[in-house]
Image (cartoon, rainbow over all chains, first blue to last red; front, top):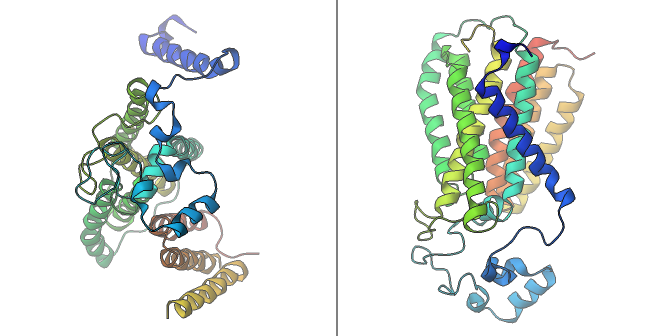
Length: 275
Length: 80
């Protein structure tokens, strides 16, 4: 390394990578009982509800067939024995959509892994294709230009709606990102709207950073990665389950920006773009 | 009623998948694959999985089709 190549940013980046590497190796050398969990969270029935701690499907079927009064099995917290839509407060994670509560809270590592897989695939795509420059597409017709200018804002609106309501209705970050990427593709093909890749990279990197940061803060506050430490609010309202809402919005922005970068790279390479 | 709709969509999806395998023109193959994704998303919706249906419709029917069509533009359209 020459003298002029050394700067503070490279040094800190190298230090950060080294610390992450040591942190990754640490489970090989430590002995004991793993991560410390809070005292009152060590009992598994305090952490998850009764249905999730059951192992077999037969047991749930027996309970459901024996008595139709489900209320005494829904021990979600001590304060709320039954869940009433629009009234119950301070639940375990205040999502009305059960799939979101599993995807982003109980199985948060899966979502993080999916994000990393998508990031690596788009990274490989841009690395391979950025050195090539392709033939241009032909100019769009009048009908294409008018139709795309009419449709694209509504598509972006639908995408933002889907990731903002990920904890209330079906959908979430990944399909919302795919819809936003389709909208940017339409604007690219239809009316030659030349968005800058650097802005998308800014959105993508910052959203990814804040997802990891918010998930790691859960390790400090509640003792588990992706733990929900903000107030969960009332079930069914828009501002309920605040951490899941924030993380799903960031995931939607990240996936949308990432897929848009990939599509732009496939469209004309990054040659004629200001990076 | 919903059963016969299910059977109809199922048969259509099988036909479109066979077309996507056997078509000589790769553009028809990709478009029938997109139709297969759309029909599969309707099947998921009937089977009470709206999350998976939305993901299948957004990713399978829109994005992968576009990526395949970009790939066909860069290479050859006819299958050999």
